[in-house]
Image (cartoon, rainbow, N blue to C red; front, side, top):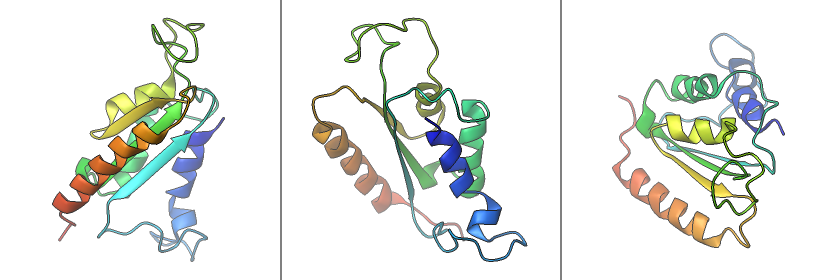
Length: 140
């Protein structure tokens, strides 16, 4: 899985067509006047995306002008490194980079890919996103 790498690429200047690059395939996707909600779903803890989790956070911060209030991160992935995890406990003590990513952003939520359904995860996430949208102040 390369979920975080795909997110970083989607927010890159060439794909966004910003900072001197010609129009890219994601031009107009990223808006200053909107909250960015990133949802990553993977059955792997993402050991394949390049860079550490801090680099992924920095890509989001750069995309949203260093405003940690301007984005929300939602991740559904393995919880095999968690005691009592729904995916088993085969990786206790192993650092999962997607989990680290959620832990180091201002607004992140992590759910287990092994949950019987994702309804409660998304119910909670949507409520948080709505509340954040209502209080979001775009840059002037």
